[in-house]
View 1 (cartoon, rainbow, N blue to C red):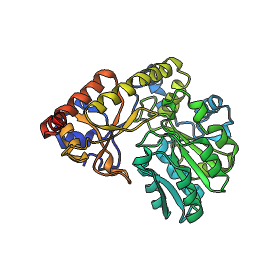
View 2 (view 1 turned 90 degrees about the horizontal axis):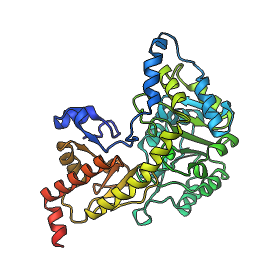
View 3 (view 1 turned 180 degrees about the horizontal axis):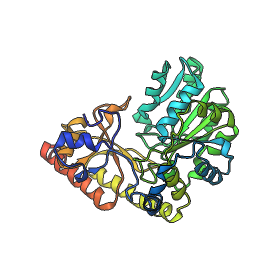
Amino acid sequence: MLERYGHGGDLVTAAEMYGIPASDFIDFSSNMNPFGPPDAVQRVMEQRWRDLDQYPDPAVRGLRSKLAARHGISMNNVLCGNGAAEIIDLVIRAMRPGASVALAVPGFGEYADAARKYGGKLFTVPLLEDDRFRLSEASVFETVERDKPGLWMLGSPNNPTGQTVSRDLVLKLIDTGAFVVIDEAFIDFIADEDRLTLVREAAARPNLLVIRSMTKFYAVPGIRLGYAVGSPEVIAAMRRLQTPWSVNSLAQWMGEAVLGDEAYEQRTLAWLAEARPHLAASLQALGFTVFESAVNYLLLKLPDRCVLDASELQRRMGQRGVLVRDASHFEGLNGRFIRVAVKLNEQNEKLVQTLKAVLLESGTHAEMERG
């Protein structure tokens, strides 16, 4: 199983499974910016490597200051961490939700993993295919009334569906008294993110926390860098639980360096506005159901006449050097779903042509043409 460690982007496992060097894969199973790291990342590595004989700043003051200025909030509202994964773990521990954590499914698996690790009982709100996987206000408040969860963890944009959560819905949920965590790891890929983000609300409210990632948009997942925005009291409670020097020096320097690279940001947004609809149309032409997404990945349902399930499709694609995510590992989805990243046009064309070849080999595409 390619997702044996719970995520896409595992090139070591892919190389072991398919006998292809890791560098030879085109990886659509993880959702990174296809332009790669900004030039500032290379400059940091070239210019600051000698500074690695010093400890990192334990308070991450330089990066926190830049993030606070970017969002118009105080440094006391910001906590940096070893990727969004550490932030998820810290907020669960700090809030001690006990037996009441609510999640929307399908959603990012680490929310549930972290809750279970600390004894939480899970309540799930299903995102329905018939509703295009949008979070329904009615289903949310049905869960509020029935189960009274103390903590909500929601992705906006959600992974794997790419859907955002209504700001009004989140604010109504906060008013119930529950603690709400909104994971905005992919929101940088949305051109009008300022209209959607809840960062400033999180800084002002005691029961709202926003999680952000710097590794997806700036394509530095190997560094591990994320941050949380919340009230000073919540941030302080999380910091007390954090491992010292959790954010290494390279991560801090790179984070500072990439912020404000407007040319990189605009290039990325312009690419995605063109590439995503073009890829979606090409996949629909092959018979896939393509669900609407606000970001740089697409949830797909296999063609009705496809005789392969997601696992077998993934295997045959992997043998050809193209990796896709088997989305059946997300709770609430079955073996008819895969997820793919949006990449550069040449890579996207390789994805489409490889999918077409696999479908033809299985007889699916020929059947579709006859039908």
